[in-house]
Image (tube, rainbow, N blue to C red; front, side, top):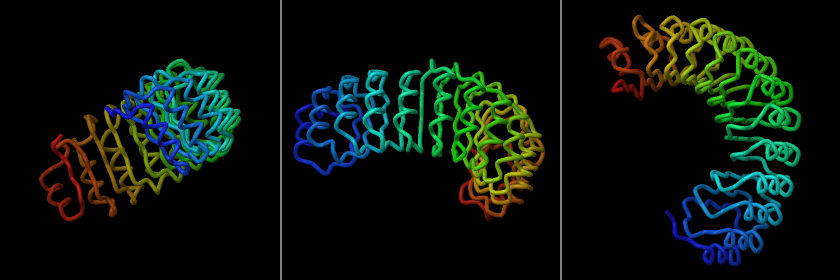
Length: 330
């Protein structure tokens, strides 16, 4: 932890009038008093603020930020002590925000959608947010480029429909532990967000083969694909990615039990620009020639991370002349 307290932070605000970036992590002695003083005296020039694990910082501080830090462009909040009231104050007072990471509930998300039209990066974590709040993102964030949603357990395809309809510039999408999303929602994203370059699913158990096939058909600019704990995605999905996503450079597969060597071989044949392959606990991969095909067929491949039993001695020998990093000690 850090023992910087209110007096020290207040002094920074008083003396550093050109301060543009402030990162507060594990500041155990800091309270609302110190951050409020800094915002009032030195917050005018502040552009980036990050707060994590500061247990005595509450909505009071964010109200001060909303009132005095009008130039703020980036805000990251990782704290259970900050709630809706403070987030609403920032949304109403900081219209220049472009990057926002926070935990939030419905009212806060709606306020952010209405008050921060320039937002390009949005990372949200909360289990109780509903579709009604998330639909506001699709209406308001026409310039949004990165969206990451973690543990949205009431989030359904209805929200994805709205996001796909409004966020046409979306390039990076991460969905983690969003249990009620399905292939229908992902199909809407594929059709509406054709500029996607980075896509990650983690524990979205109802997303399967059909949804990823839509991505392969529509998102030709995809350069990075990460699938974690996606048990319903099968070989034909990655075969479609191999046919349609010629610019794919990185593929991460963890605990995808229905993806096998045929999928990896098809991806290797279609995605000649592949540079990184990470395969772990995908037990259908490795019985034939999946990894070997990637190493021999992708001229730009530089890094492969797989379990040792998936790679033959012959493939290891061939990889030595090609790869900068072959890791098989898993």
